[in-house]
Image 1 (cartoon, rainbow, N blue to C red):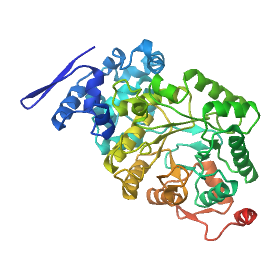
Image 2: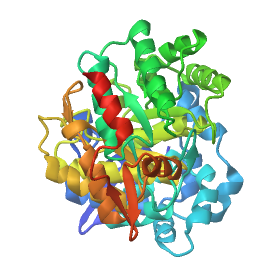
Image 3: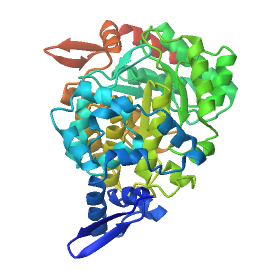
Image 4: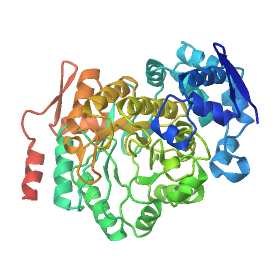
Length: 464
């Protein structure tokens, strides 16, 4: 295990391991202080960043942050590393890699080819040396396209997950939220419900309802109920219509065990989803959610900083060729990301690292009510991520999730981002919106219908 040393002024700082230098190089956040791994002051943080900049990328292949024999995520990272893809940057240090990423040599094609050659730890390391504008600049170069019933991630487009949660899973309430979201052009990433209860009967009812809405109106989108992967497998075995297989994941074997999963179980869910052959334009069908602090909250972080742990989760996601990966950035609470500044930084880091590793990244731009954050902070992060080329965001009535009790982005927020940044929905969904009379395309601008389209007027009447 290597030791690293760097001086700042007259003071010399010593770092006991790669794990230690990564943790102390991280921008300040409450979770790392809680874990006892953060730099003690700004001087130590700068020294760690300077030491990290001098470490060769190759070193990350020889020093495992969690031992190979003790952690299946480590084994996955090492066993699936593509040495040929890594070759173009294998001679670089972390600092040199940052410079290369910011250069014209790092274009969309070269970054796509590089992704299998990068380990999560390399991505996490370089992100710690980057300013906000660096994270945005590099991420917007990268496009990761995924396909199921539509195509998400194309340049110039931003999709949304329509999230019609209800505190009692009441079908009429969910249906009203779905219609409201569709009328604002939301739902191309998917229509996804966090269920209030996780029993198979309730999950099956919700899945059948979502399938009926999609089939009735021939909507080119996909449905998901965010239940445990084992429940999804059982639903598939019973013939329940299920599009995307969901699971929360983390960056260590122990943290995943706290979710009741391992890599073999995820493979079983992936295979079950494939067996249905429900995709029409592609077979990406896994939906993963992550979030900085999840491993620490399970006491399963092995002394790693929370951002490096988060990035290791992306290796798990990448293995299953997902349709969507969603960092639920401010959901875990201020114990891990204390305020708007920390949430904004974390969201940009997660998006950057996920894209760099070849993932179709989205972000639930959110905060809990006891965090030192507000909707202005979320507007800033939404705008930055829109510029950075994020694949999708959340769309929720009034930006207030009445089931999960947290604040996120609304149907109107998605419309703001699309109008301001000139972004469109997924192409198949855009065509459907125009066919249904919800969107019109004039002088290059997407505009909402001025009156309720007849098909949706009829649907709303049926709810009464």
